[in-house]
Image (tube, rainbow, N blue to C red; front, side, top):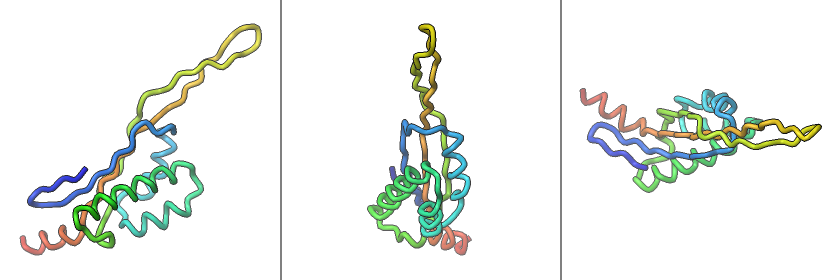
Length: 127
């Protein structure tokens, strides 16, 4: 999704119903918030967490959206990155004596917003 205003250009990518706990994904998202696009790619490729793979795909998707708009990847900054909890899948695990325990499988929604820092600096210099 691309948002064009007269003051700024933002590019957004959204992943819904990712089968991971939002707490575990936030641990990775907090590391990349506010960083440049190239620095984010280096950080995510070296992180040992499973959530880093899903976030890396989402950052690539947001950069592809920016490329469709004609923005340069070197000028992109992650302006907003958030994780919201999704639906919880409830499953039953059989236990001894005919009983069952509930297993909760959480999901989450991840949103990444990229902003062009070169346009931001140009607008500030005009003011």
